[in-house]
Length: 442
Image 1 (cartoon, rainbow, N blue to C red):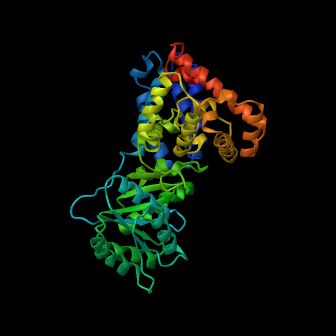
Image 2 (cartoon, one colour; image 1 turned 60 degrees about the horizontal axis):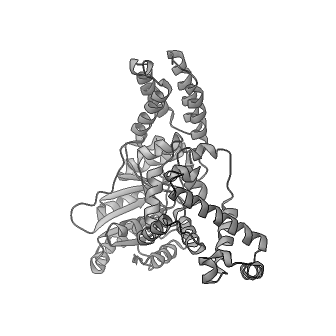
């Protein structure tokens, strides 16, 4: 998300950076381009107007005109105001007496059922014991889908199939939660339009029966401006406490994320960043603002790595690298760890500078995944001795490895060449010729 907006804003700032001194007319010209970029990204008109007014008020002041690098000062102001527009990060308010009821609402197809599973996984990682409730009796296989997800995650699911109404199902789930020892209840309600009076009345009935501590709207970020109207409609009828934006990894203009907090006053609490059950992130406005402005999102990358990497393995790997050791077994372990973090294009986009460098470069995720699988197959076709000491691989051994992995001798040689290059790089780092990660990228 935000690729187009990010690209346009970076172009604006690049041209701005070529000016040594900023005049008021320069700022006005820049603001016109920022305004157009935001409107094209589907940001609400009033939000754009207020945003550019606040930026102009600060950008034409003495602090910017006297700055050593006025263009960087303007970028800083834009970043600060973008964070302000996105609003303070919302967090789940699990206070009082358990079980805590969290009610998920939204349109059909917005991703509520998958989000319920993601949220259950997140809560369990925080030390809670969640119970998911199948309260969608209208969509075919909705109950089955939630039960399947529950089995996959080992999270209990409460469901009824005897024609019971959703308010009754949700009410009875409270006792089921107490019997199971669950302290958080996640209500997966049916999708509905905010203009459907009968269905919205059903949501209000559920709310009145179970008194949820959180009512979270699950909204598809790819719906653009309509997502803002949807949020307003649900907020008026059931009183939202937070937003979860899904599909933010999609090819969307992304204006809804910038507009929703400003228009509704309801905080964004989570972002759904993919289809996998682990693809749910806490919302951080400063990180999202940095990502929009092409500054990367290193903190989110670090958090993903911390959840994907095994600390003990990482410590062992550090010791080996300090000794200049890095065999193919190590290479295989690191490859598997990196694959857990997420799609390669998404990872590279979080690194400052790389997102801009890769602008216009489309990585074929399927091809990339197939290449990683090929490397894995080649290494797994080797004996333990060959993985530890690849130099023993002569012609006949390479032919055997190629046959065993379904590849060619040329592909085996390419992998060995890459491994030797990495070995040399690690030795140079240990000899002090390269400094830290900067040297690694060089």
